[in-house]
Image (tube, rainbow over all chains, first blue to last red; front, side, top):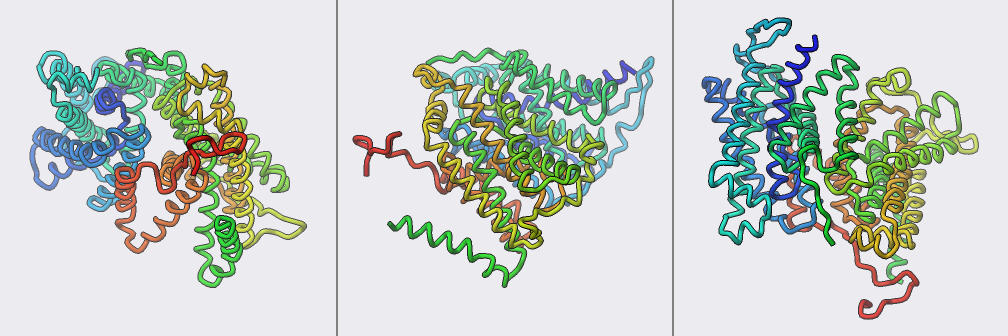
Length: 290
Length: 319
């Protein structure tokens, strides 16, 4: 029972972590919360469904296609809805993001309808029993692929030249620009990577729950954002840690305390963590200078 | 003088409106009532966001607490609506105080996520505390208000009631934000550390802003419960908080009349777009983005004050 819940919690936690990375990378550079990110994840999921069902491509090709198209969507959204607001008050891009979110949901509803759609793949239904734990093929895929993506992202950010430029941009935008880094390109890149990761998460969730629907981005977005804040928003390892922690807490609270109140418990934990340590678990402490 | 005339014309129009609209349809009267409810909500949120500068994302939770408090009192204890209205407002204000006390230490987006979390928690309690709230089924059969033995049955009565409530809310909040309290809040919004350095206690005024905002949301909630005679958790979702926030920003934060304008726009626009029903949310989303790009201060943003606390024109700022 305990190990089963831990497995389930890790699975959903990995999904949260993948989505949370998108929030945290954008926040790290621009200091804005991209509230439309949950809906980008939803679009990614629908695109995966489209490639699988209409174009009949194999699953991994669907992942790649969907990630690329969603990345382009992320870049476009940044160009159209956030870039013109770069100098504005912090609350302005937030409202703009809410507009983008409404827009994306209604686009999905116009194209794909409002009802839930099943995911037409035979993959993932097979289950394995390890000791007392039952684990399905899709859970293994989620755990392995998420780990690969996160390790890949970590290496990319830490070891490559572009990754270094991205980190420089997130430390100080103006200074990075003075050093000759094309900061606009770095911002686009952050949106592209975040959106692509969200698309992968979207497809995996679609297979895991066998359901895709236009408003699926809302709860996933809130949970992932919670995860990002929990781990320390702006910090990439923080987002991973926060996601996994939140998934575990939700699964264990759902199993041992109350299914209905599991979201309440995770929000309560978030509030407590923020009150004790406002910058999250791995976040850097904000120093307020006059 | 022109301003007085303008206000008089608006007042006359609002008073005569049911007579004009009553001929056309009950539906537009309902739209007017919804504008009234959302005006009260957005004016309350404006105190928190526009004046105290605190980014709160869970205003629908206060609205819901007000509505449920009123519904439970009206159904279970058979109290008069005129007693329940202030009680709901005070209870909700107390919740605002309770929420405000721990969270005011947080800034910006962190405050946003915590208030958002608070909103979700409140909604989940409405859904899951079935013994009291009947969960997703909601509470039906809330009795209509009575005044001197005369029961509020039609939309016209409710229209005049909400009109009175909006006017009271406007005048009370207007007095508060134009008093020393309002000036202190503005100072905190502009620079918290500066405010603290000249002897304004930021925490005190931030909690005050939360309490005031919640208090008026409680009034709106109690009115809503009596008007619809049914409350369910569906009316108090995160999207409703977002909607109220959008009203404050679109109308212009830091200006109460702007909040009423914002509420009117965001209540009426979806109704007008009904004729292109499939595309209406799409157009609304686009309109919000375009608005933020081309006029981020909202339609009717804050005018910088020309008068100081003592009512005299300050040097160099007049005209």
